[in-house]
Amino acid sequence: TSKNSREFGKGTLEGVAAPEAANNAVAGGALIPMLTLGIPGDPITAILLGALIIQGLIPGPMLFIQNSQFVYSVFWAFLLANLMNLCLTLATIRLWVGVLKVPQRVLLPIILTLCVVGTFALRNTFFDTGVMLCFGLLAYFMKKYGFPVVPMLLAIILGPQLEEHLRMSLIISQGDPMIFFTHPISLVFIIIAVGSFVSPLIRRRAKTTVDDDECRTDSVR
Image 1: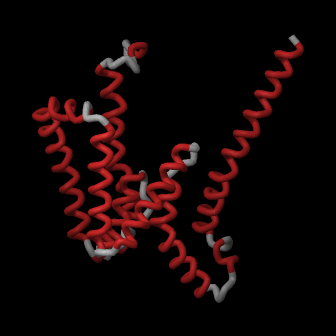
Image 2: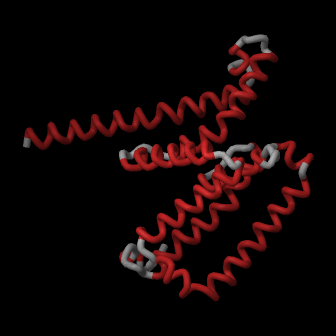
Image 3: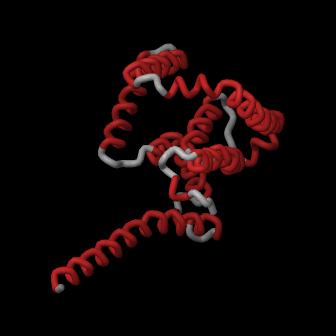
């Protein structure tokens, strides 16, 4: 849609503004499944979900009934944050450009110090700090070797809820796992979960087959 699309990736304003606008727009949409269903829409809302659970606020339909004042506060805060973001960005744009020039050898120790202090302040135990450092190293090596970190983050946050509701469902069905396959809603989610797991394998296999065929064709030529 841009007349200067060939300039994207070279510092043109349109190429910078387009992904940043999309990045800001996705924040509101990611809050919807997090607040209504307890399912985070991105890594940021996954962290926010964990913070809400620590404070005793369980996202989901009951959140709107039991803590409606909190939900409306989030809506207003989100609206005001966008307005403040616009004003502060216009006023301090040169400052943030300077922050981008700070070398990583200075920035990373500051971030690590804040993470250690924040983790220790939760319960005043070094065990929590050790857990944070271990998972930080795990995430570093996962990212280094090409493994996505976000699924692990979602599993850590949503795992306790999954165990709790799985236990409740099995108690209701008296231990019969077929309860998940006899109700349309749960069956649809199971199909979606299986499809999301199988489809990448099928696409990868199909791509490998196409690459093999192209290699055979090139060798024949």
